[in-house]
Image (tube, rainbow, N blue to C red):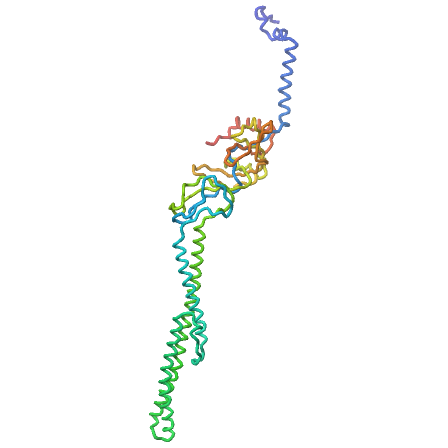
Amino acid sequence: MELIPSNLAEYTLESYIIRISSRSKIIYWIIILIIAGGIAVLPFIYVDVSVQTRGYFQSEIEKQKIFAPFQGKITYTNIRNGSKINKGDTLLVIDSESIKAQRRSIRKRILENESSISDLDQLKLIENPEMILAESSFRTDRYFIEYTNMLRLRSIKYQTYQRIKTEHDRNSILHEKELIPESEFEKSLFNSRLEEENLKQILVHHKTIWHADLMQRRNDANSLQAELESCDEELNNRVLVAPVNGEIIQSVDIQKGTLVGLNQMIAELSPEGDLVVQCFVNPADIGLVKTDQNVRIMVDALHHNEWGLLDAKIIEISDDMIIDESSNAYFRVRCKPEKTFLSLKNGVNADLKKGMSLNARIIVTRRSLFNLLFDKADKWFNPYIKKEV
């Protein structure tokens, strides 16, 4: 058995154990037990796993941008920064005198066309040339003149017909007595029948013209009605009304007499409505986010250590990815907060306002500390897991 030199004996394990007091041993074993106990309970301690994102408060209705529907001069404006408006209030009126003049002209043409159709409807009903229409039954001078011209022409033709018919009647008597040749009789018969047919054709010819004119007038009536409706629609569009209740924000300085361009943005309307939280979730995290999940919100303007957190629930997730002006991609997630204020411990309340920025923690699941520790270790030591750039 080899002996340890006396000068080295104090550095041996046996010497160190002898020097340790019983109290130190107790502390040592307590620490060991605490560590072992902590490891043992890791599978039974669950914590919330969340997705963190930025967002802000807004109305449940998106902001409405107000554009000038036409180019023109402003004749009335009710747009002022911060002014409260109600749905249906007139915000802006653009000069429409030219449209009103055009509408008056169309209305006049419609009335004239209706009068012409009324006259043509009664003219087409004439079957007997002897039928006489009174001047008072006509609504236009044009068709009364055409009617009187037809009667005058028929009167002239009738006189010619009567003369030829009288001559033919005389020739018929002479023909029966064989005092004129057959050819002369046939000639007078032909002339008599020709004039009779010409007399009938006067009314037929005029009715044909009137019928074609009536068809054209009815087509014109449809076209004029379409033009009138177009004018009415343009007049309505020149009067800009509020689509919802809300507040005017970011309006440009426009006054009565100001010229505006087509589709020029005039103001934004912040609608009234229930307050919601709008968050922007990274596409890499959206797979874990679902409706009705709980959300914990920290308002930037109200420190969470003093004012606490705000609870909310997800009510809507956009179906597709949205890319903003900076080419950042995200999914829009809307949450409904449980209340619209936060409170201090002394009872002081602070109302939440549209536009306040916030941090949101979307609770996606609950996992044990053991699983989280295992996942972390797996990421550290698993050579097949690569960090994507």
